[in-house]
Amino acid sequence: AQSVAQPEDQVNVAEGNPLTVKCTYSVSGNPYLFWYVQYPNRGLQFLLKYITGDNLVKGSYGFEAEFNKSQTSFHLKKPSALVSDSALYFCAVRDRRLGTGFQKLVFGTGTRLLVSP
Amino acid sequence: DAMVIQNPRYQVTQFGKPVTLSCSQTLNHNVMYWYQQKSSQAPKLLFHYYDKDFNNEADTPDNFQSRRPNTSFCFLDIRSPGLGDAAMYLCATSRDVGTGGQPQHFGDGTRLSIL
Image 1: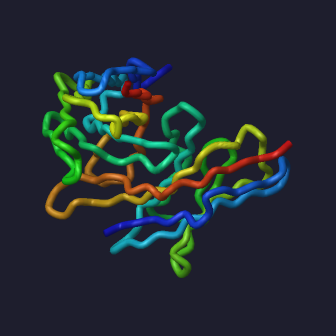
Image 2: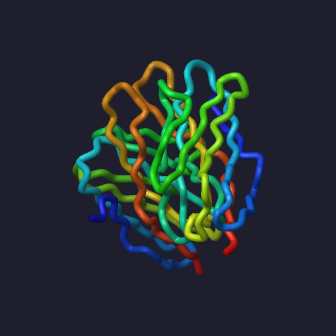
């Protein structure tokens, strides 16, 4: 089964500093990987995805993620953190049910990002 | 601009009293999902509709049902809510084009409380 792991429950960073939120994956076949962000009392918002192509994927709000096949990682990064980036971040991988066209997302446990002023 | 709309945002019901949560979308997406999310945990998929075809996750309790009368609307029915069903319920949509990789678009959820 496809899975992703987010090893950090929380990441703390000062405003203006670079941030990294870690994600590793375990899949059979080629991974389809996603990052979502969730603000308090809101739904998940799509940030970016990797399907194929360049290993560095650029997304919304200045976020980017680096796909590393040898390390089976897909870390989320931003060069300069903002206080408003404080939120819950979920990594996800596509899981396709064999014999059907159905695809679903398998989410990691989430990482809370706290950016201090 | 809201594309996936969930009503109500907050719902309080009594233990054992049936409750219905609603979701509508303006994206004309063919796939709609219902997730349960507890206490900032990862969302847990309950079921989804691919057009009119209903697909249940194996571990979704029978207490949870869903209806999709048309492309735009989808409902989550909880027949006899228990205290353990208190959670945020998220609706999401996606456009399945066969190649995969389409992102899901989420509503802002309905927070369900059980008295």
